[in-house]
Length: 178
Picture 1: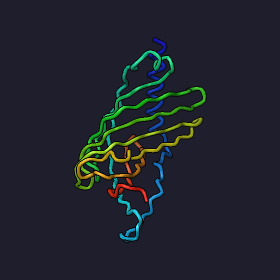
Picture 2: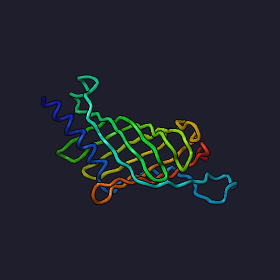
Picture 3: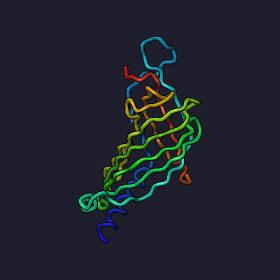
Picture 4: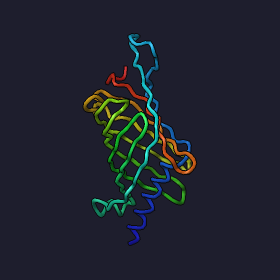
């Protein structure tokens, strides 16, 4: 029972990490140039809101629970330039005394991005170093399907008053970092 309580605390802490202020996506170093043909990747921008449902899951093995690892399923609904749903999984750990922890997650996003249909996978990694959060969310290379084949990019997440979630997504369908 004590292990189960620690698992739940770890999962709740991961959610707190996501909700902490000051989270930013990773900069992939793409040049943003509206003049195509200069050999630079032209980034596009998508924005909107999303809802997320997080559900604690039982550990796959007793060693994970003993190590204090929490596991959750993710279920999201995106609105705006990205009209899509996603499903995924998250693993997390927390040291409540020091306010440090982290999580990793993978989620497959399926729907339409500015009218283009397909899917892609987002990879999250986040740390909380004694209360200071850092979050990176990137598209897994070559995970795009359909009209989203070749998508690469990064997503920033922000949470505003009232707990409403928003995303800013910088991406290209060029398929390669130059």
